Image (cartoon, rainbow, N blue to C red; front, side):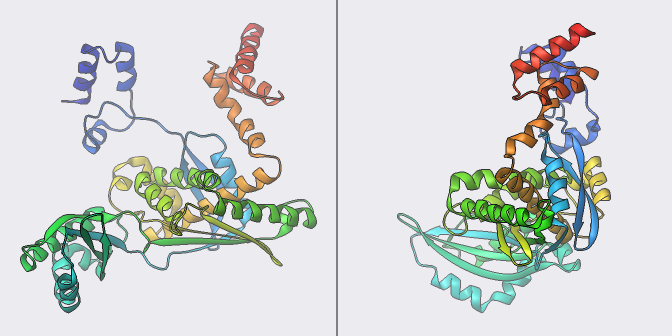
Length: 412
């Protein structure tokens, strides 16, 4: 069925009104792309695309595209970037992990021994399963195994660390695993392969961002800036201790990270799963940033698993994702990961500074005013008029916004 036929069927079955179907028919993404990108496509969802300012990463000024529906995210990222100054970022390596998992009640020593003795043969088989990545300088770099004991049976994960170059790599990894699984079935026909799949916990694709902030950049005078820096350090430490706080701490970081990943057509679900799993790497869920006070100022650092792509996939199919890459001007997936980590660090700094000074709500609600105005029905020039009046109130809510809108409409 075409998208129009799907919408018509939903109208005929009483699931949609004609007006709603007409609304869904309005889209800017070419139907040829949208209809072939997903299944049962009926429309698109529009998310505003903005740009964050003041970022300087590894000595280079960057404009950061961010796709988000939440007010204050881009403003906070820009403010945090200004405070951070020149953010140093690096990605020491970029490998993806694939797993072939065996299940059974027996020990796996024979398989582990074969992996050691016939390692080169297995690597050759793996690379032959996806020769194009080898031609581009990628391929399998390491093979390892890990054993697990369940309630009544044992499991073996055979892990392949694969250089997928600048692609996200899911299809590459999965194709290689299928080829290797066939070989393992030949070697061990009596063994049961449970599944073969990549892992999104990209601990071999870590990106780190680091900054040093002089105290006088945090406040008008150095002494006040040092006091704020100490509070930021305490707030970050507390997020390491309390998982309830850590979840909100990290959500603020993800505000910026998800916005860049979405803008570039990368996979928000894969990176989100990886980052939150990484936050629990020490056995309990923790905040992702480290902030500490030194003689030189406030030092911040963040390390994240970021298996993002700068080629292929939706990043090249979606026209505005391609436009975001043009704005970012990155040469590789490693550089993109560095920029994303830098955004997460700046986003966290802005949030923590607001939290330990004026409180998070003051700045957030000031930027939320326009959204609140639209929520109660303000249109055109009314939006800014209502928003401006809301900002002068001691508190904001829908009832107050409705009263202001009524006053504005009566005055005109």
